[in-house]
Length: 216
Image (tube, rainbow, N blue to C red; front, top):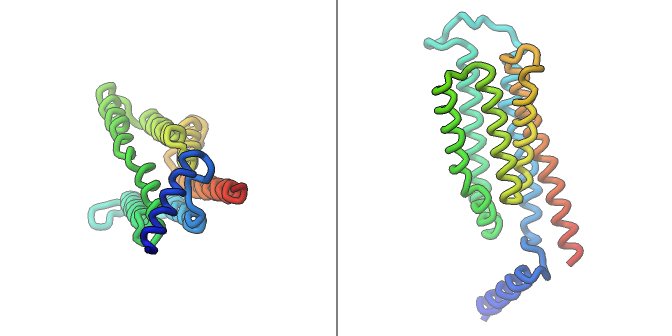
């Protein structure tokens, strides 16, 4: 009997959401989204590593296991980023007990992610064909990445992607103006800006969801 009542309740909620009589998300989503607001701050970690490695003097001519210190820093940053991606994906995919509806929404938003790798791959091919490298190549890469993040934010109404689009685009546009462009300081500051901006946008969205629920 209870299962039948739950099914009827879910059907009624689905109809209400379709008619705009109720928010398209559950109230139980909000507590989880508030948690996720703080998870974005993990992206400060690779930024802090880059800034720290740029400010601490070390002999880049000395090699350890065949690699210079700057190369080890790059490997460390890549490993940290991969670890953050895996951890965030596991949490958002429901391994921590979040509602099934929120997990489905997360998968819907991130499903087209692989498609954005195609323009990036074509950019690498195009740059190689026209022998474009160095700072012009990197500036174009940041601009393209920011544009793709902006497209994802607008097309899927996932505004948290603006937290990536704005810093990436600004970093690409400001490349000619930055002193010592090759320094890891600027790249590190970009990651810190991404972490902070994503957290702010997520908090703003959660506040809007709370107001929408209060209105109903």
